[in-house]
Image 1 (cartoon, helix red, strand yellow):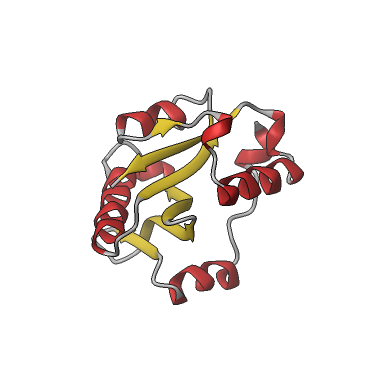
Image 2: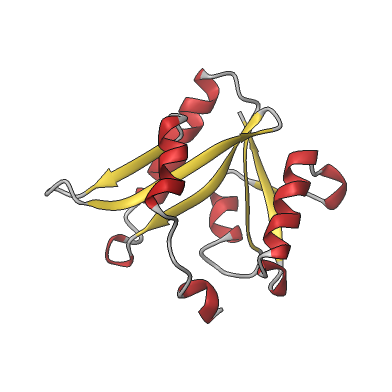
Length: 139
């Protein structure tokens, strides 16, 4: 999965779309430098986690989970039904991690139209080369 590790991060313009929508959060260190972020988008009555990233030097400190929990609070307050995401099925810090955060894998027939569209875009971008899964966490 070298291609994934070497993939460029979202551009500032791409991130600004989430920021303007009020769906971007950043965790900073004690010097106010960003060390983790989460961006989401509304999809079919829920909030879909587009990306959650933690700098490797800050991994395993709860930053990603804290951002997910913050999003869950935002979703609940906003009347959203669920959080969703797509991720790699067999990478230990992906699907198994999200399962520990309360997400469950969705079967193909459980996918909403918006999630189906996301899966199609991901496959077109080449992500279908590895096993992927859609996951959901109810509010």
